[in-house]
Length: 166
Image (cartoon, rainbow, N blue to C red):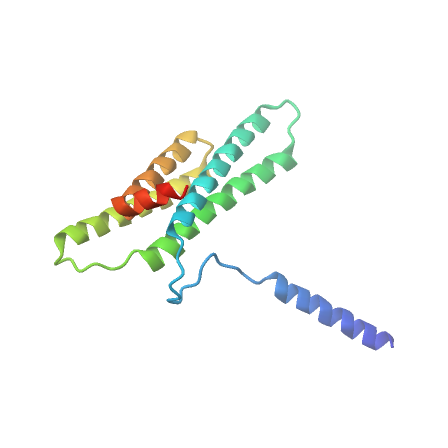
């Protein structure tokens, strides 16, 4: 009886460990055709706001006479986590799945392609800078880049359609 209880406990612990380490991704990399590009842009904007709030809290907590290290660490981790989420959306969603390779022969399309790549690369860099500092200029630049990418990514007709559904 005691042996069975120990085996059950070990099996349960192993199962919880395995299930606890499952990684979930926002979207798959198979051609399922289910894309919500506007949602991803809105998620990036939400992550930027969260990073900005985290930066403000870190600065405030750092000024306090009695340092609350627990809260400080939590806000730092929060800032890092949301910057990572931006980087994941940019790389795993837009760069990997949504921005299609363009033949350089089509100069106009290729120029548009390079513009989108450049904007996404800058977004990655500023998300990294957000992890490294509490400088709100980095969140401001990231917001501006997100707006510029939105304009470059969505055509005028599609932007009008999206505005109608806001």
